[in-house]
Length: 93
Image (tube, rainbow, N blue to C red; front, side, top):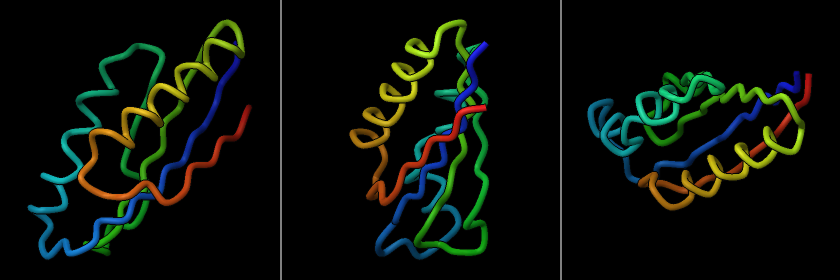
C-alpha cells in the first residue's frame, strides 16, 4: 500500500467573510471525500479569510496510481477553486 499526503495552500484574494471563503472553496470535502481512497480536510489557515490550506491523503496499491490521483486532484483544484493554488507539497508514507 502506498500513501501520499498532499498539502495544498490556496490564496483567496479579496475574500471578506467566512461565508464567502466557504463558497469560493466550492465544497472540496464533498467532492473529493466521496472517493474511498481519498481522505480530505481543511487543515490550516482557519483564522485567515484570504487563505486556505487543505490536506489530501491518497492511497493506492501501486505508487503510480496514487501519484496519478494526486496529479488529477491538483489539476482539478487549479480549474475549479475561485482562488490561486500557491503551493502543493507531497509526502510519501
